[in-house]
Image (cartoon, rainbow, N blue to C red):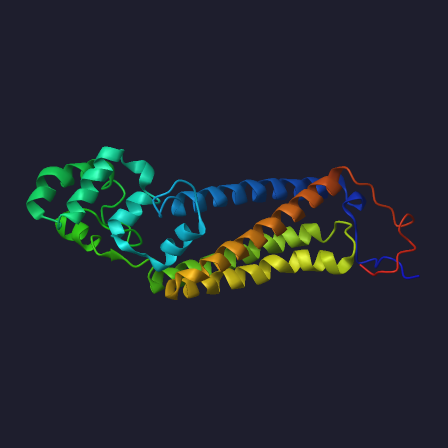
Length: 254
């Protein structure tokens, strides 16, 4: 019978300081992942005009909404909480009536200056500039979703960030006792494969909204892998007592 490979050291074999280090890392990663999920919800929810987040919301985020302008799409989605319903309705009505400059100066500009210009003043090149009629007029075009330059910028940030997160998570989880070993390896490998599928599916969704289901599915796989690794690791760090004598008759190498 083959024994567990001695390159494998369970958490219970580590000193308190290292287990504390692992615990702190897991807690911060867990909180960070939670905030990431909240950010995704706030960025995409409501784009289809319905409460909550759906596959259609994701499709609109990447491929656009041919029935709404960019400004309307933002007001229905990530910026929906920034304006009262009556002000949002006033801007939507103005957009649908033809973007008249005189009406803008009298009715729309005060709303935008009060609610939007503090952030959308042109100082940040990555968000629309809403300071003045000409800039607002640019957002009155049909919503075509994220442009390619934005996708490329977000892609490399997302890929580097996710790789770093799951390298840390996988390193900690590798010290957990999980059988069969192939299953443990699949759990570790899943988020790396999922992030590649996720990012490439953004571009596919840009071409055709039907691919949004892949974005949702790959994100779900990452989330499940993260949750499984987090829960198993945290439990075994403090509550599971492993001994090589107990498992010395295993047939599978770690």
